[in-house]
Length: 242
Ligand code: GLP
Image 1 (cartoon, rainbow, N blue to C red):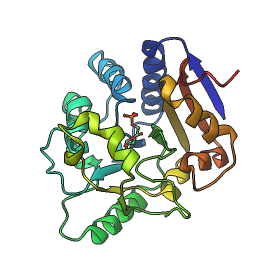
Image 2: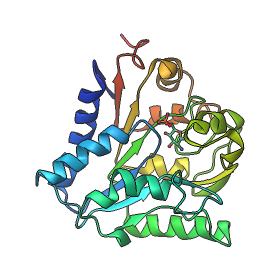
Image 3: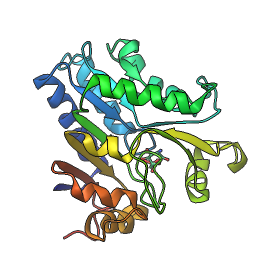
């Protein structure tokens, strides 16, 4: 594990974006696993800035998002489809058919999970998987449980996850109760994982995930088993690391 701490959000964002654009510069057909949430917004901003400066092109890149809410229309401002449009896709030259996000409105959600896994299989290994971290140790929407599922699946969101995400919605009642998420097995198959964590409220969970027991009660703890894990923390989230 390579853990880097930054004394400002700007530096963290630049470092994260530099890893992503550097990969595409060396492999123009890179397959990226992408995350949503508040944490990667600034990283996407820096990636877009690099694109605008002509440093990188996404024409042959393929992307797979980790997750999407079930039952939220794609055009809803808080859908992960809207998020990706707003923060990345509309600003860069990535052909839309190469950007994959689970369809949380599919008539048959189980079939949609199978379709998503088949697409991932066809694309081969994810070269770089970007991850944020939930306060309860979730990655994607893989919630703490007695067992974790390897492939894409429908998940019922934990109450604490809905509460954490309620800040993006008019009220808690508006936060969807289910999501489709990429499975932990798929996440761990990525060649490289880039975990980004910010803020004092995540200091304990990121410390537990990376130094505590490896357990399905903290899905992010499984990242300890990954041979190529890079962790970017701001000073607040990294408080418990020397
Ligand atoms: C969300 C997303 C995750 C994200 C996490 C943390 O629910 N499904 O992919 O990493 O929660 O989000 P944030 O970065 O907003 O704290």
